[in-house]
Length: 367
Ligand SMILES: CSC[C@H]1O[C@H](OP(=O)(O)O)[C@H](O)[C@@H]1O
Image (cartoon, rainbow, N blue to C red):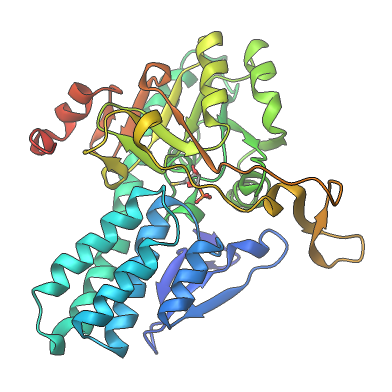
């Protein structure tokens, strides 16, 4: 997406040096810092500490991490170390495992002399495929927004609520939940976005709001607990979120709090859509609540918040007593019965095994 007068992806290779660079998202919206990742531990730290985050972006970053490792040491041992080190960073987003398994399968078949070149080519391809996939998700999601717009008074905005950041900052570009918003805005359909702040890391307040400002899309930042009230009062026409892992039966694992939004949407008859690339579907898992590992992050993320102080410095400040520990499950699972549809690059699937197999028939025997 454009930032100022330049087009950015969330991860890219420097055209001159080939070095891998990212936007360090921890400091947004107050500071726009780009950093180079080189050593394997650079990539592991960037994923674990959420310099980059979002399932597709985590997968693409891991792919480039393997490539940089191959450039340093193309041995089987180094390949295995890259897989194990990066796989251990975050347990929930399926794209991390998918990308690492893809790279390992490719590189295991390559002679060591060709591994670095093959790895960077595949990592570039994963990144490029993510951009196109998310663009297509946006086109399919656009039709949902267009249908709702047709029911509104001329010029009246479609009110969309989104949770966390499933924007271009969570992917290589376009985003998943935000891609329909960008396409609708570009098509001249009036939209307004309710941006959930999304405690504890405030990806909505820090990242989605920043994206909305950059795109010129009307929006309001709201506390996580306001969504149900807004739905009760007819102020939400549509909910669109992202996902970190969706099961073969349509259960959706996403940022903590998504399940509560889905319950409120169901109770108020508000359509609840999830936007995802097929790389985020775990075809081996059918019961999301029972089977998807939920990342437990540091309690410090709950007891402290990041922001810009009156002195203009960006910093963490403590909001709770010294003796209060934080509990911090980072994701929850929304059962398929609460999901209206899954917006994929191939179209909108009913949230069920049959619904997904209609769009992805090649997966019929995938466990
Ligand atoms: C397009 S995936 C976005 C997904 O990832 C976020 O989690 P995190 O910021 O912890 O990586 C959140 O669940 C978003 O919906």
